[in-house]
Length: 201
Image (cartoon, rainbow, N blue to C red):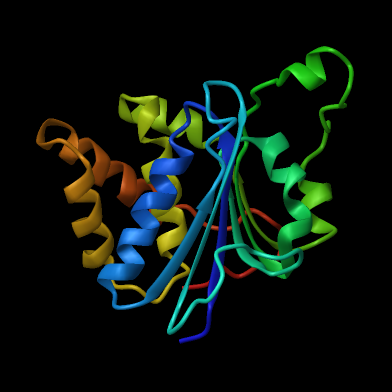
């Protein structure tokens, strides 16, 4: 199996690191070698967070180079733009169409992009840009955002659905399991946003 590179990014409190942990466990369950790198120092609520997961037959290093990420899974729009240079040409951008204004924007150090989709399309046409936070709230709990994002990602990886569900079951308390499995399925039903693009299985 070819090496797969995934970058998760967002802000503290969105469940970014948990999502990367679950993906790493899923890859291990599928018999793959896995390396993971994450930034804990800024993972306090509201701070930028990034985690990189690499898996395949044999992985020697945990870090993804520029233009080498097969997938960017962004829990917040500005964070998606921040790490866009890591996405390989025509890689898959999975982005939550949701804004959490960071201090750098509030203080005028950074300008928040007004139109995100054209920025993404300079690098790729394989884009999912949906308000996943709104979907999570509609399911009854915004904290299932990360599980919905994993559901979207699962459509692109050749790892059987039961492996994903099994890993989720080990991470979620019984009383929240039904909700999280619904969130995972909701993610699997989301397809690409960019015009003229055929969703990949």
